[in-house]
Amino acid sequence: MHRSTSHYTALCATALSLTSVVLAAADDTNAALSQIAELKAQNDALFAKVARLEEHAVEDGDWLTEQRASEIRSIVQDVLADSSSRTSLQSAGATAGWNKDQGGFFLASPSGDFKLVIKGQLQLRWAYNQRDTEGGAPAAGTNTAATDNWGFETRRLKLTFAGFIIDPSWMFEVQPVYARNATNGANGGLENAFIQKDLGGGLLFKVGQFKAPYAQEELVSSGAQLAVERSLVTSFFTTKYEQGMQVEWSNELVRLRGYYGDGFQANGVNVVTNAGASGNYAGSLNTGFNVNETNFAYAGRVEFKGAGTWKQFGDLNSYRGDEFGWLVGTAFMAQNLRNSGAFANANNMWGATSDVTVQFGGATIFAAGYYRNVGLSGPLAVQGGGTSDTMNQWGAVIQGGFFVTDDVEPYLRWEIGNSDSNQFRTGNASSGNYEQLNVATLGANWFPAGVANKNLKITTDLGYAFTPIVDFANNGANWLVDYTPANQDTNDGQWVVRAQFQLLF
Image (tube, one colour):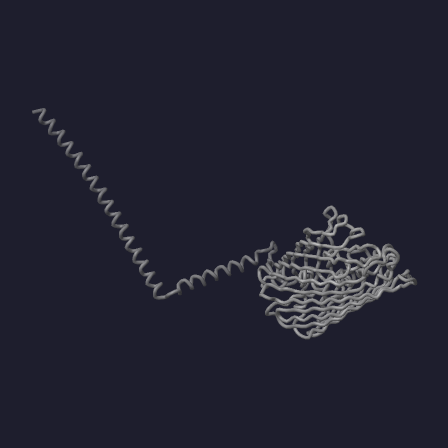
């Protein structure tokens, strides 16, 4: 009986354990089923929402997308407006960015009393020159008897800092330049450095260092030329940079400019007796008040604009779609030198130039003529006997270009001139037409980013000199001095090939 009772008790305990396990499993199953049911309900709700969104998209088309895009644009504009006021450490803030019309980056105060524009120019050039050196020494700085020269150069690297201070009527410009011919890396210089005041009514007053109002091709920036480089004849007669003051007045049709100050640069005005060489007067570029002194130096220019805008004549190109315009100008210069040092021959000079520019909106023509009278400090011996103390120099250039496509512009240039220096080439130096200039140039401009972005320009040209290049030689234009045997008029012709990449930034 006792064994039977104990078996019964064990059996009951086992049954109770099994029952609890079964009940627990049932509870877990119910919980899982409940969760599944809940997830199914959530999925059904999501499907219903998606279906309603699809119905709205079909019914309303792109309205929902456009509305959201408009809202996003509005938010972005608000953020940008807020950030523009925080671009300065000043509490009032400042504006900054890129100005396409002025061609540079700028910083400006929100009150409008200060603005600084920073821009630059980079010209990288490859050039080849073939010249006559038979029977004579080569030009200084070139290889011995080098009839063929070629290589790369950084023709120009300019930085310009311009703007106004106090108010827009007080304008300033400072332009450091880094050109070729570095000596231990020290090849920096200063071109423009002036202050200009707008007096109202079209009247401007300028003081400092700048280009005299004389040759139009020189007044147009080196970054806005038709060819790789300015013409040899303009480089010979130009007055270049000097230190002084200028008054300008203009209206819609007429512009008048007058200059007074230190001396002008003048090429081919100093003759060394019996050496047969025509030297240059350096002018007052970035010099002290007692260096290259002049008793006086004046220049004036008058322009009449028959059509177009003044701004468009700051460029020697005319692009498709541009406004038709034409400009006629005439100018004079006069200076009296204080004879000293290497410039003891030239004593005084005066000159005049006239030019015409026509822009057709896709084609352009430019022509200029020059005359200069140079008085020497005393008479010098001339060929055939006798003496002379005067040189009468002249030159002319005509060039034109036209766009054959929207971004390709072929051009042609012809230039002639005479320095009137052969009269002083006596003895063994009396050979050839060294005073003459007769050069033709053919080339083309290509704007790889299109003329809508003129900051990139590639220019290539080929030039040929029909007479020896001596007085008009210009290393900056890649035309070197020709040399021929003494007392012989021989010349094989000088060739120049140039290719230049220009970046304005």
